[in-house]
Image: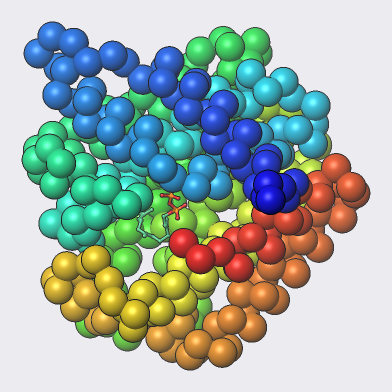
Length: 300
Ligand code: GRG
């Protein structure tokens, strides 16, 4: 019997395949003295990620009739930024994770210095891609994309959230402090992924705000689910190093302070709230509603 993919699975697969092709072209080819860092950039980026953020860029852009060529280029920039954060997060000085996306992390496959440089290379490439006029003919739009990606990834976004996360080891954080940290660490990149579609489509402010709200609820639901999966992984055997396990145990998260059952309820409530913010887009946003369900029901 042939297993038929659901609409969402098919759409995720299509975007993943298209994204792979675009990233493969935009990533430099290994050559000369810089070949090693380029190999590391390609190794980490072209591996098997879920591509949720690029998918959000493409889906939100579809709401405003933006061409696929344009949204895929912009989506690539977000995936480069995301991959840089994963490479750096896996380093011994941060989360110390030897495995990423089912394969040795960048610093294990290459070495720490190469992994730091590969992350730097991807971060800078993300901004370079956004200046390309194939992303959008209007330079003001390209400039808005660059600024908003810098804000989402910077010290009041992902970098700041990561700092708070590192400092949270052995600290006691309130629920609100954890929510703020997670919103910065992972939520801002989700939000900007949805806003990219709106920026490319020159959408009105009301639509931008709805997408921001959707993404923030989705990002938090994603993070709670991630923590639930981590807890379950820890109980059922894990590939994580003892140092990482120890660090994680000493870091507060919503699951550790709310417990498993309340966390599941919270994730489900956030999922419903996320979907309610899509009302103005009617049926055109059905795939984004399905994605919200996927995010809280995923197994990896
Ligand atoms: C180093 C500046 C800097 C930031 C790191 C994103 C991040 C901040 C750390 C990642 C650590 C982590 C596991 C966070 C939990 C949520 C998360 C971002 C998981 C990874 O995202 P997925 O599941 O990954 O979308 P794939 O591999 O599918 O792309």
